[in-house]
Length: 123
Image 1: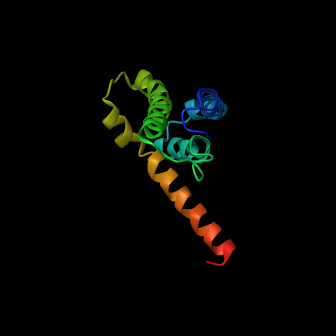
Image 2: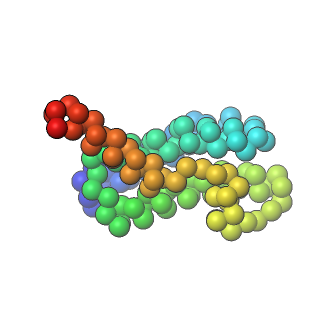
Image 3: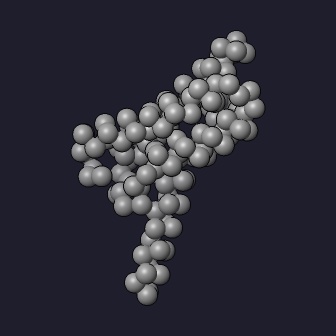
């Protein structure tokens, strides 16, 4: 993704919401927060970080990744909050679900990709 490319960013965010919408009916049926977190981590986070291996993560891109991640997390929490009649701060939502941090995941995938390229080139 080219930095600052608005159509690419819009397409990328649509893909994240599409992946979230595929698990939404299933996730809303579960009360087990560990299972909800595993589904979120296995579908939304990889979609959110797809291609980060080759991105130059600027502060603006990091902010967009964090924003998109927090919006999907908050939307997931709204269902739980409606069933429990609670309203929590975002930090409490993160501690409740214990979802993988997106930027850590992106940095790990970038490092794994760099190691793969180095092995492939014989360095």
